Length: 510
Image (cartoon, rainbow, N blue to C red; front, side, top):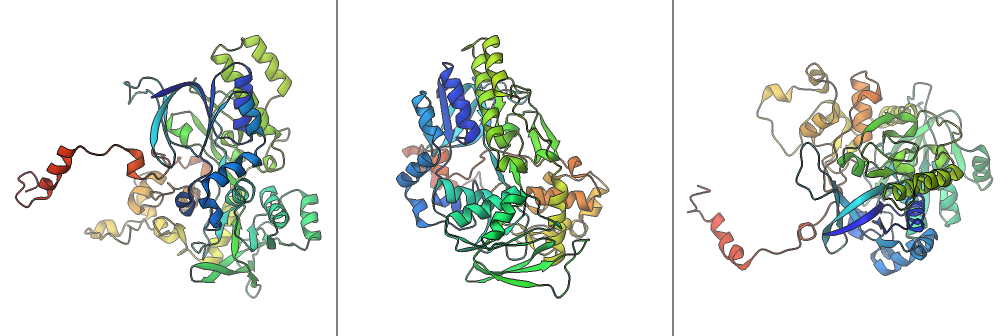
């Protein structure tokens, strides 16, 4: 097992900044990023919601490596600073000694590339894993072409492999507006931007620029359904909504489009932090559950630091990446100081020159918008829309606590259970819903449905979204083939003896 003084996970703006600062302070740094992802993972919408909208260029790993390096000039700066950069490597697990484990030889992470897996010990860890798309289902979103804004940004910038031709964007915040601008810059036609709010939420000058380019912006609108054949989106039906987010009859508009991009919001990637038992707190203005950290970006676990969107995302960060960069620089300096590479006074002086790493303007609460979108989509498309794509669980099945369709309940009493009867016994808990319906147990580990489940639970239980517990994360955080999880083959003796287990005369199996 390899051991490194400092490991930085995530080679985005904040991760590269952290790695550069720590390396310049004299620390041996390893920078890990899972991009480029193999096509097999992209098809599963991992790690981003790609929606099958990528070209065959994604198959060329060497070309993708070159494009990712070219898209992030800070990687060259990190390399010049002596950082060990490992691209195409994902972190599938993170482990440390705790009340339930006392035998580990120090904290460690599980790594995997396209061919093998391994473990790596570390003295300090900086988590700069960014954010993922907020996904809320609409009728037809299981067709190819429904994707997330982060997935679109990644395919347009990092991979240069987005296959969309004409796109409809859901969300008029800075995330949606910047996605529209990037699409236009990449030669993709933007059919429309829509939002459930009565006015544009993002930067007004950017919205005006897009409108001058012929982009229509529809406020107080939602999606009724996406329509297509042969598994692909071909058109989108929009509908106007009233003050209660109910569809207004007779206001439907049909837009020709092959792609619908969800750009409502982003959610911090906290999987690794959750596995390491870092203290997490619900902060709606930062996108939900985020790690508690001090001014030096140190979490409740002394060896773990956080930076960038993983520390909390808000819409202003889309247009101002200096916040994420500053947080990364602070985390890198703080990690270097904790390792003894620089003294505290020097670290304090360096950090004071950077600033606080927090936005100048307090971001607004996000979950009101999330709830408005969920209500509008449910009102327009119905409750029988799939919420969990991996396990094909609908919103009504989540509310009704219906078991998976491939199982048969033998108990009449259990078949009568609903979320309302469950709430009489226990508070609303996504893990309980997961066990009963399998929503969130699929390949994406709930990345595309956990917020929907939490919002539905809050709505049905008449609770505040902040009171809904975080659904559990478990390793492996990425779907991995068994031959990569454990590359060693069985011995010849085991192979020869193995068929005996299936023998009808085997006494153990009866």
